[in-house]
Length: 55
View 1 (cartoon, one colour):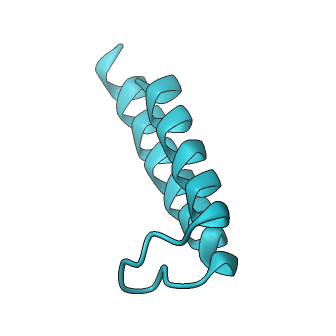
View 2: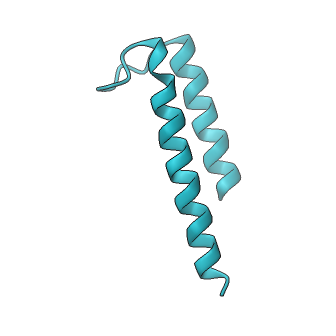
């Protein structure tokens, strides 16, 4: 699951650099860092959930 999330968010960051997505807060090419922060948060939550579900 974490690999899928990371691949999708890296693709979204690359698309944002090439052609901005146009979503609120993501209208400029330089806003790709917001996607990186979002990716880090989602990835962290997925890892924490994985730790609690394997117990």
